[in-house]
Amino acid sequence: MCLAIPGKVLKVDGVKAIVDFDGVQREVRVDLVNARKGEYVIVHTGYAIEKLNRKDAEETLKILRSIK
Image (cartoon, rainbow, N blue to C red; front, side, top):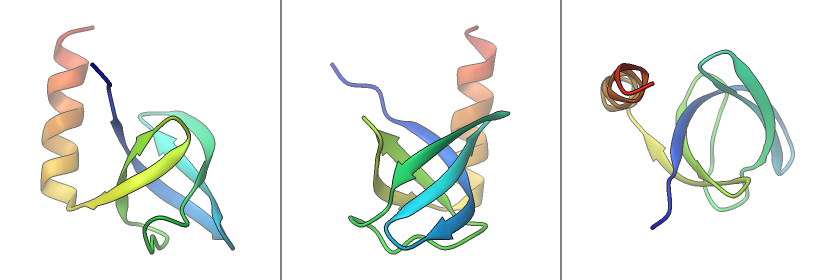
């Protein structure tokens, strides 16, 4: 089973972006999706694999926080 985590794109530079995962920032490849600053993406193994709307991203993050 794989786990993909939603994060908010803070900055895009070519095919790389800085994505915030609930306070933890990581560099992520965004060449599989056309992600822009402010959008949410689902990330798996360092690659953004899908865009996610804000409501769904926040709901998913809320669920993840509740199981910590």
